[in-house]
Image 1: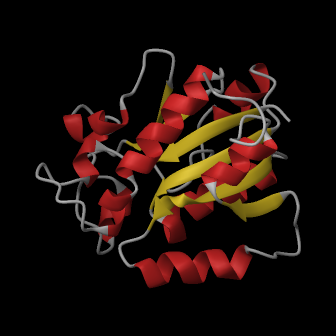
Image 2 (image 1 turned 60 degrees about the horizontal axis):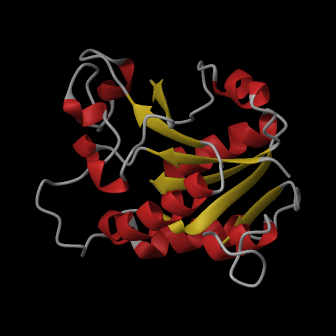
Length: 193
């Protein structure tokens, strides 16, 4: 297994300036930060898939209000996650990190065969990215403890629906600790330091 991590839409513009840690999207921030630190220490590529819309983008013709406008700080990865210069920052105009981007080619250049996906929102952009990862022939894992929707029930219901999908094991749902253990860097295998 040669994995990469994709963190979807955990952007400055999608989080309040004053975070109290009570919203579902806020609760995962420290978990994602610590997980990314561990992944970087073992040389696992990290990709931030970032909404980057134009002001008059088609996507805003629905109920969605303009946000993450290209050229603003709202499209930058959340600073709390400690983005590094070695991370890949990928701008996207739609829900999936693969749709009309060069992500598949970038991952193949790095010889990646497996992607582990976290971020917001589980039922929309995380899931769209996961489906497109499978469609681009990558083994795909949604990291359930590193993903969130605005309501925990929505997050749980969507993941439960795919936990034992017909395309298992090429599409799976697991916790980040299970993922690290499977890759050989969990607490019962090799130490991360």
